Image: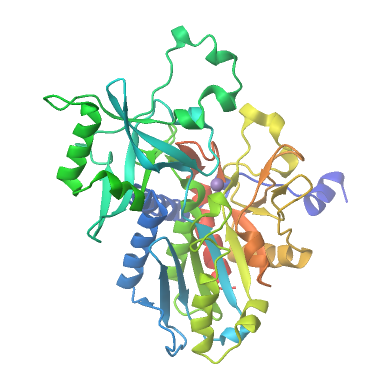
Length: 461
Ligand code: MN
Ligand code: MN
């Protein structure tokens, strides 16, 4: 054998996905990405994504889970977890004792939540005070158009939905930065101090109400909120209002090969899971699609992946077949579908190029995440990695290896560890992202498309 032949038979030779993309696949990819972008425009918070998914599921015959219900192959069942997370299942022909195939993504993204007493006036400018949610570079969130999304539980018990800044006729909001001319001191600070958390104050208005009094700009804003939404100031306490980047998802690049949007992490995997679930018919094993909340702050709380809401839902399914929940978990597989760091040549020194995912090389499989010696990772076994690799290969899914940066460079986690803690074999895989957690993140259309194929392959494994 020549060295060339040896090389071809022994060594990996990853190829850019465009070299193997067929014309049919390209058409599917473009159509899929259009639908994904529409989803992104409609859903910027976990609540919006949950509401959207529940409505789409009902259109497709999914019904809410009810304790005591009978469960048979082909049934489509979902649980809306208090409007903030959703789990959907298509019951397989095999009993749940044979396990389920789970894809788990999250639908919360980093942002700036309003404080419980947010509205104030300073120097005749009205502001909202915020407390950021998830990991952000705070300096990225100033001088960009922002929108207000959320719900308010009013004093009278009614709940109203608020969205300002998305319609073309809406105003947007903004956080100011210091002009460069006076930034001598600011420019000497470290990036984490250039804009502090307490400076993430959102400008709401500047026009005082006519007449006598103090804080008349604040009062004007409160009056506007009262006229439009019936709000009084104490209603902010029983609200979940959040500041997110305003605007729609956009094609990026002269070749339109990328999609720029707020919150690809992790709605890009959530959407792939949903479309895959719609397409599988009745699978052999029960397919379970999870869209979780609170991943960005540790998967805690009632709607996070550590919550027993998952056991509650799966328990209803297992009870419906007289199956033991623990047996179902022990035989289940979970794809923790979350985004990864795409290699960025601008910051090459932060990554190990041989082990980092790249744009257009397909869904990135992670054996482990975590930080400082894999701390906090679920660290999938050789067998689990073998299963996912074979499953993807057999289904024609383009995949690549991923790791989150150089050793000791930083790190991060996903829901994987919490699924594995349940005695469910779990592997991380997802779409590589540039500028993760920035107000605008970038993904490649090709990787989005192969993540759709990846979710489908897992459900049908
Ligand atoms: Mn994520
Ligand atoms: Mn994240």
